[in-house]
Image (cartoon, rainbow, N blue to C red):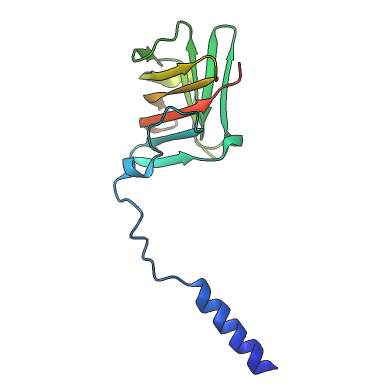
Length: 162
């Protein structure tokens, strides 16, 4: 019985191994972000100082339109854009974008709305019938207690709550 258990354990252990050296993982950080789409796929990704962040869990994504103001974000990013919304136009994010490395202020840096000193969001799709927003974004933020942060190559394709 012990030999059978040993053989079964070895077989299960070996079957869980793979010989894939992660050759399918792209080396370019931008290639690790979700593709730019306009279907309401609930994707959200960006680079933080060159490091990719890809938010696939929709419970960590927020997009709400209320009273002429669109509030959206994921992965610690939060942006505010006031109407009018236009497609393929740069909407200024200065003072309207926030990045929280960790929600607990004792554990991570907080870059609040007033800390963002440059940036923009460009909507590639605004579908008010199906409640979809898609586009790209980038911004920079500074905080005296932390290093400057550059959010680049941001992309989103989200369903919003009207």
